[in-house]
Image 1 (tube, helix red, strand yellow):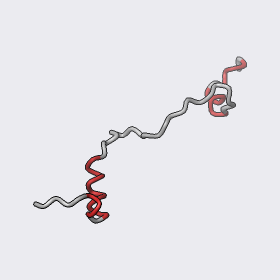
Image 2: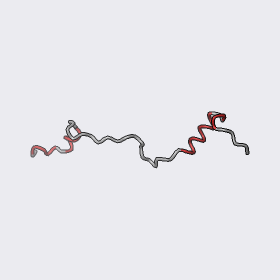
Image 3: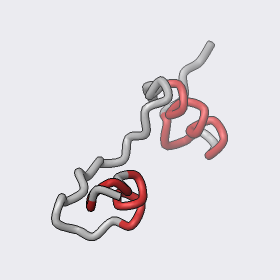
Image 4: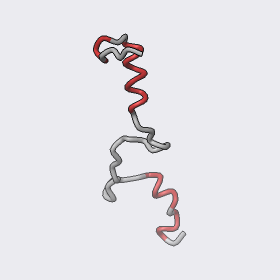
Length: 55
């Protein structure tokens, strides 16, 4: 089998090659995660803790 350089291969073949070299994330999203600030007003958080004022 003759090996052709990657630049000379079709876009489809290049895509297959790069897909094989990529690593699987196992269900983890590779997006940077940001911790929410405690100072920000959060209506959902207030509804969870309804007993703030002793009601």
